[in-house]
Length: 302
Length: 337
Image 1 (tube, rainbow over the protein chains, first blue to last red):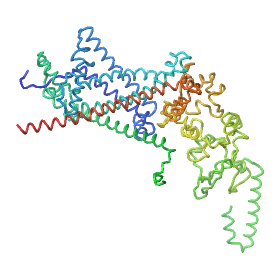
Image 2 (cartoon, each protein chain N blue to C red; image 1 turned 90 degrees about the vertical axis):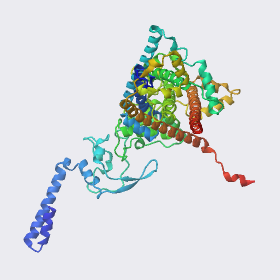
Image 3 (cartoon, helix red, strand yellow; image 1 turned 60 degrees about the vertical axis):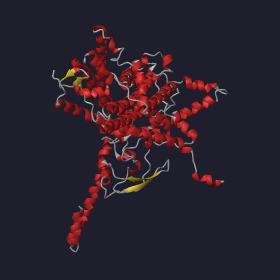
């Protein structure tokens, strides 16, 4: 290894492949599913027809759902392999874990102090607390979406699971529709605004954080972003193990070529959703105040 | 024959020519009467005869039409779009214009301007009309003093009311949702909240997606609480089973009209809560209905959405601001050194 090499490996090929599967399926799911939620707006009609209209868009949605299942299966297979075969306990507890740790609460408090200029920003470990939130909400969301999605895919079979007496109070397909719709709004809104802002649109990373595409990250960047992790690696002497050849210009170009359009589509979707939401809320308020005839000149009546 | 007559008039001074004209007139009259009385079919009014004028914009004009029942006044084009007419329910080979416009049966050439309103019911469609009038829908309308819709109110073509659409015509299916929803606004809104309504709102109204009439029946419209209606406990399995084969007893309990986006539902729930001491039955009926779980779920999700985006939005803004301030500070300290 050369001495001037200062690039570290952050994501292995397996995780990058999983993330790529999730990207493809998530965009497919959102682009075919969101028009149904915003059915009253012209962009939804355009998008739905662009995705192939009634049966086709639905089929794309189901195929993308199956791709998501593959990604989820791969992830849980990885977790099982790590725990059972490699006996790696670090994925559940410790600084390398994606689950929330006591230190994360301290990091959140430290960050709040930093927001109000009352202290320095805490040094983050391998995963920052908001990344853990994103991961956990992805896990929870995928589970809800998968279960309710299957209920909507097979409504007759789902309904027959419930005895008739309970079915008069609990209508599973309707519950699944409500949960699926609003969980989808939550997921799409979260990924396309918060996740994009947290990773790609940060002042340091703008326009695209290439780490998830090339898997490699600059040593200086790592030191700045995840100081505790860098120090820990240095102490444990793992730093040299993670050092790799820097990403080729071609890989960087390809990752930008893939990342930027996806970023654009996502932000466009957020714009559409947000503007439609504002329109809907305005119409609800107009509907509520329809019967209130407030005469501003009545103040002169005395 | 006419051109022949015209040429002979020019030479009318001649007696030979006069005789020729007389004979030819007699001959043509004879030919006319023979043709009229020998074969009636030759002069039965074919559609082509009507369409000769009614497809020519120079021959026919727009006309003010007053609906005989509702008194609605509208401007109607007398032009017939041949393709649209042939695609319509009455556009087949064995339909003639005079089948419906029966008062034109004996006329020929130009006819008098105001025809009798077309009677759909008496000779052809007495069955659906009867079932419609017997249904509780029509009965309730009469009770409330609302004018009953005519056949043409629902069965109107896309461009002209005349082109009666077929039952599976896409425009007709879309139009029916709007026509039903025009009066039943609350049910229209809640239908749009359901998956059926979402897909039809996006423009797909094929027979594989349920519109109002697919569940509630076309002419025999009964209240869904009526056991004899299409959504009664006996018939619902068949009605749902048309699209969802194997629909069971639990499946037909589906809430097709969720109320969680209806402000009236929340108002009535509030009133019921306020009256809980006087009349606890109201609250019980609200809690017992399947709507309550959907409403709780909806309100919960709205709360989660608001909290999540407010919290992470603030976090995002503050951390952006903090990073930018840190960068500036770093630059300044760099300058100082």
